Length: 100
Image (cartoon, rainbow, N blue to C red):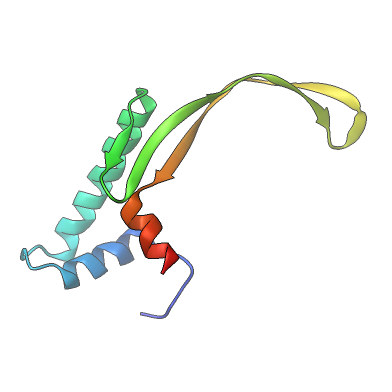
């Protein structure tokens, strides 16, 4: 597989299926990845934090409403509404791996 900046879930499933010793095939791993993503989204949407020890934590954060400037007309002030955003905080194992 060529070295790319990103991999999609199907490519990730193929890598995991080829690496693991559990006897799971690519299709099974794809289902597991899809389910994992669905569960993380569901829990973060409900306001919970999903922590994968060593890897990191997925959470949501409320960004409060604030005043801003219209980029097309800098003299015009606009209201930016409050919104909930996704956050990811890297775990120790991931941080240490990136330092090396």
